[in-house]
Image 1 (cartoon, rainbow, N blue to C red):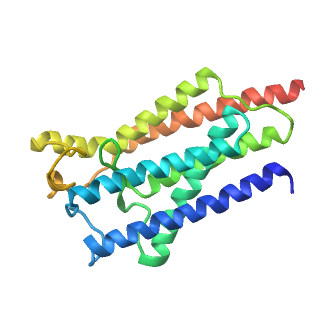
Image 2: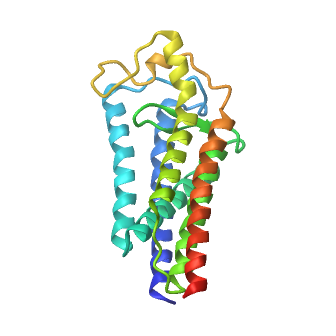
Image 3: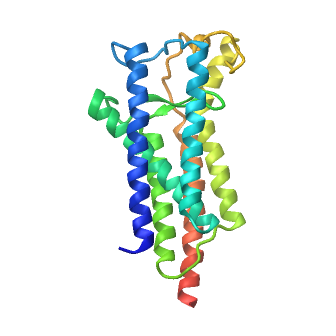
Amino acid sequence: MSPLRKTILLLTFFSVAMGFMESAVVIYLRELYYPKGFQFPLTPITPLLSIVELLREAATIIMLACIGTIAGKTPAQRFSFFVYCFAIWDICYYIFLKLFLGWPESLFTFDILFLIPVLWIGPVIAPCILSLTMIVMMLTAVYFHERNITVTISRREWTMMICGTIVVILSFTMDYASYVLHSSKDIWTPMSSKDLFIEISAYIPRTFNWWLFAAGETLIVVGIINMIIRHKRELRNA
């Protein structure tokens, strides 16, 4: 087994283990706050646990970024490993929840995806689509690396991927933001003395802006396709 493939195998094991740990934490939280099964509207969480949960999410991203940085040798490879670990972690998280809780009921079940900087909500299939896109990106980097092509990400490709990511994040957060704005409720912050989710105690997500999500996903995919075309050209000229 080549050193690169061994690295990817170890990254996969690491990410699966992180996915299990993430699901274990959520299982504990659901036993505490949703003993009859997770559903909207959300149950308020005490300020202390809210801050701990925010820090836990931030720590998860830091851990994934660190392992990608340690494993990669070039900026593009480090980024590819980071998004790969993120993708495997995210997919395994839902697999373990399904195994232990029988949840989600379907890929279109709504879930809390993230809390930073505001609440992200969307159907389970949406982050899974993003995760598969991340895996494709990493496999592309590996393909060219094994053919002695130094993988890079151009400024144009970075721009498309970053813009696409921002648009995708908007698709996850706009329904919550719209609800809070129209209900004249204050958005919770770590400095608040009130419980997390108290401002949306009656909020039940019913729609997801698939057009906005698709636009963001398209930008990301086009950025990856541009990267593939550029490196294929280099491969032909090598």
